[in-house]
Image (tube, rainbow, N blue to C red; front, side, top):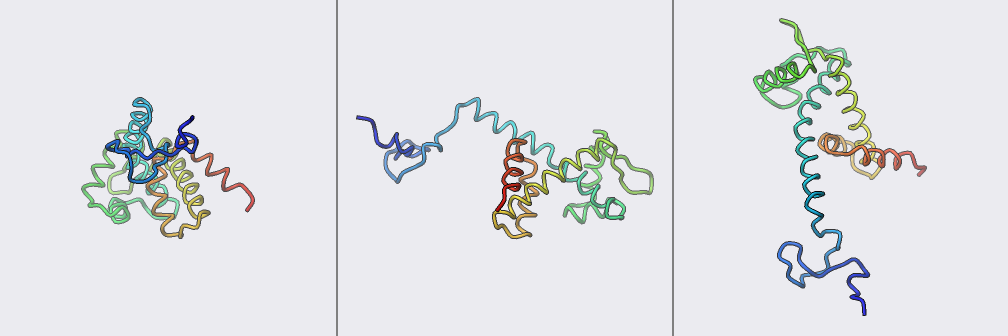
Length: 168
């Protein structure tokens, strides 16, 4: 006779210690294959490396498009960091070909910087709209989207867009 737990997709084994008991745990919580597991962590590390640069170029684009200058002091204030932190990051972004600065002027985006800013903005808007469609408050959706946008895959974004496009 087949084990009834297998047919329901539930196991009574602890994922951490393997003990039986302690309540039913979905079988989907079992550890994935090591290579698949490692791929998830690799993608997360890649997203974390790019997230900061994306945040900076997106903010610079927002400041410029709102008619303001993208000054180091304004970037620091809006990101909640110290000006020396911004200066170091702007040096890195300039070395990566995403921004340029003119003496005694603000920061400007290169074409590559503008592309990254726009891609980041679209991801953010999609994630935020999806969260709002679930009933998340506007402020929480905006804040949560700021982190999620850097880690969401193209496949998941497409799923968000399809869900948003469905009639309600």
